[in-house]
Image 1 (tube, rainbow, N blue to C red):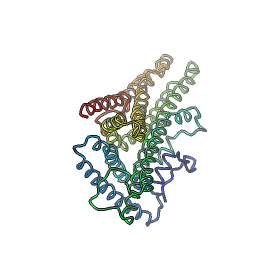
Image 2 (image 1 turned 30 degrees about the vertical axis):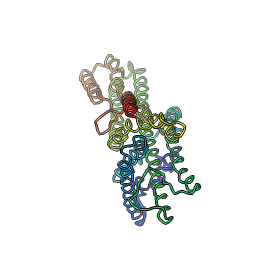
Image 3 (image 1 turned 90 degrees about the vertical axis):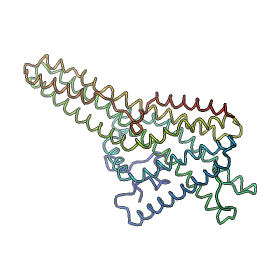
Image 4 (image 1 turned 120 degrees about the vertical axis):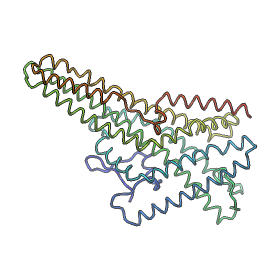
Length: 402
């Protein structure tokens, strides 16, 4: 029923755990197979509506908590992290569900055309695996935070109470078991959607970017090897300039194909990136404040803070890596030793055409690809550092109010 991407060979992809978790636990955002039964679509639509209502109920209940504790700074800030992540995932998960067909097509295209298998380039594949570690790290930290929240009602029930996972004030008495159990289950389900969305989307974006980076590298290496092969036979080959021209044409076609996929990634994740970065500084500020005020009693906030910092740096790193790679492409064409080919060619018209073509390839790639959040900001290590500095400034302000 749930969509499973296939490799170019037609073999089903063995998904890493963040994507497998995303696929299994987030039917709201994960697409169905093309031949899924009609009842699968009904279940998906029903889950979407029910999930949307659960998110709204939690939103209203948490706002009630804020209103009641509006004059108590510590209690007020205790509910901020969960509320911010509630709103963030509400925006990310439910807008993603509206574009499931596009996301499915991207996954198909990625695994069929972009994904670099270990058998083809073990060096790039191994490097990509290492580049996934930061995402796996903060996903595990968030999962650890989630376990703390799940353990809280279990401990509370053992002590004779009926606590909820999050700071909420409901407009009705939920102490009867017939109301309490469904409410706690809705808390757990919401947390599952949150963690699966963060882990799954972050891993998918990282995987797209680093494999795309690897494809650009392979394209550059192939150009260098092809040019060197032509140069070895330049003096004895009257068709050398035509062969060189064909190499540039083939490289440019691959270049355009990769650029198009990069733009598809940008279109798919731009809003999600904007949403993530919009909440980062404020959430980090509050988390650090809670850790600062009572570190011994806020282990979950320590893990959450570590996860947020790691997430900020990881996103900055993938943005910088793809920008650096694509920034070098125009230089790749310029440094392709076209002047050596022209030097041994007596066909003036062919020489002029080649120089114009090289100029065109440089012009096409004069602007590097930048991963952005709705074109408001570029995702880079510099922007990540700015966010961390902003969080530090907000933290200082909160300390002065305490």
